Every structure is written in structure tokens, then in C-alpha cells.
View (tube, rainbow, N blue to C red):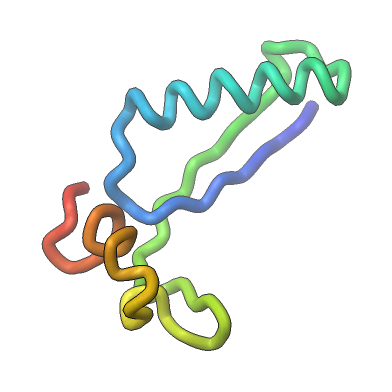
Length: 78
């Protein structure tokens, strides 16, 4: 049984998570020969100040400001 854990910044919609789950499940069935009903996907929302890339918090990285403001920064949806 494949268990797939996905960490995302907050703010993705249910429709986005649903579509992602459908696509990843399809890929797991094809690549791993898993039964569709045995593919488990767990979503975990992680705040932008709990993620660092290259030693810089995502919440403080100017190169990620558009993503953070949309999906994980102060005042973002979700």
C-alpha cells in the first residue's frame, strides 16, 4: 500500500487537492502496480515560516514572495 505524504503551504482549494490526489493516484497505479483503493495520500499544510530553502525561511525569501503571499504568508487565504 503506497502512502504518499504531501506538504503544501496553506491556501490550496479542495478542488486543487482533489485533482492532485487523482493524478498522483493514477501515477502510483501505473508505476507501482498498486490497486487504486490502496493508494493513500495525506496532505499536510505547513506555514511559510516553518519552511526554509537554501537557509532562508520561505516567509522571508523575496524570490518566493508571490507564492508565499498566495499560499502561506500573513493574510493569505486558508
